[in-house]
Image 1 (cartoon, rainbow, N blue to C red):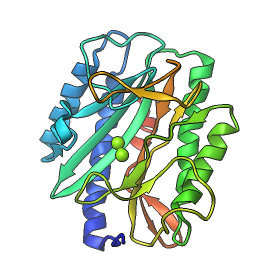
Image 2 (image 1 turned 45 degrees about the vertical axis):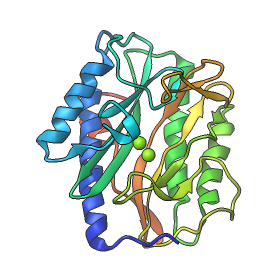
Image 3 (image 1 turned 180 degrees about the vertical axis):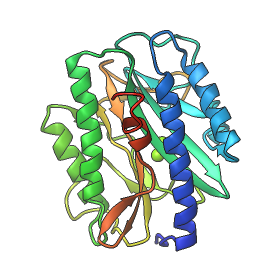
Image 4 (image 1 turned 135 degrees about the vertical axis):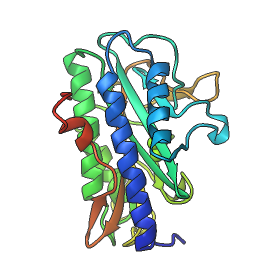
Length: 259
Ligand code: MG
Ligand code: MG
């Protein structure tokens, strides 16, 4: 049984959500051909620590970095590396923070320079599918309603949905119940209750939905090596709707960067 969060807990999760959102924007300002994901990781870790928080991914089950950096056919959980980003790449940046015992968790897929039209469409559809999922995240609905909303939208564009990974509850733990799949049937799955805090994070593939785990035990690749995109926001369910605790506004409305 999932216990709804108290107002105090929601406030701490909101502070974390704000910090991960601002960290992603700091990273986004630097995404460009020639920059290494290792450098972006370093900047993010410094930014998080300068705000009195801890990068929660670092050391989590042995993960070596502050950010997951997943380039092109890597869906999620890529390691930052010394390989410079190239024009036309896309990079999913997933960021987690721990502040006052609570977690933040959000992700954004950035284009590196100009990307081709199909890749742009993959990114746009994946992000829009996340907002479709958020619209379905109302008290009384079930996780299957979120999954259905994401899946039906993404698939209507001919894209496919990764099934091996899913969204999750968020609180003192980085991954709490309920699991929030990005596919599903309306009216099925865990009941959504007012006060629940969840992360919704569609992982959408340009080609088939098959994935495999890299030899390092972390990076999840598409089996056909076509691109995948990944966006994640944290929301609290209340007052008949999902209220965002994290945001892409710092990335998209700041004005200094255009995505
Ligand atoms: Mg995440
Ligand atoms: Mg997550």
